[in-house]
Length: 273
Ligand SMILES: [Zn+2]
Image (cartoon, rainbow, N blue to C red; front, top):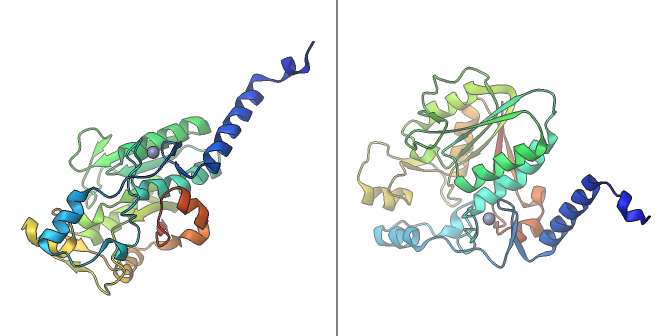
């Protein structure tokens, strides 16, 4: 009887998965969110740059810390460069979890592509990870909540949160940061990201301004109420009680950033309670 008949099915499956992984890693570009090979990524939609120009937003996109204008969207799943950055981190994070205890994750204003990736990741890990989505306005989420008033969540409830590009929309971001700190377990972590302009020294904010043209001009988008400087963002996050880890190209590897369409000056902020 040929030997290959005795190779267990699970091993064959594993070998096929590894072959697929090697193929993806060897390709020029790949998207870690939909886990597919792509020939290139799509640029930032013109709508943003056109309006920024029209209303006189003075900062070019290369002054933004984590934003790859030229390779912004995955043509297959629509993941942005920052979603791809989170996927690189989350793969290892879920794999590192101890399988014994149930853990809770909450994702604020979830990105559709990343959310689907996280659900697949949790399912394939076989671990008891309970993932919820939350948003103030969207209806297709588990919880409709205001991030500055998370009274439906208990103290120390979550082991991990994702809060990406939310705080720049929130009138009182300091209150939101205190709430995020309250709902996180001691030792818990979170992905905490805002658009940062590297060339400014201080935060510019005006939650009272409702004029969309002025918001385009000052903050770069019609529904943003502030523009973060790096030092201003870090100070607010630390004031809320978090420790901050900055993970950039040295952590992830420059070649991996290149293949996944993430710019070299991108930084992932992992906060810890
Ligand atoms: Zn994709």
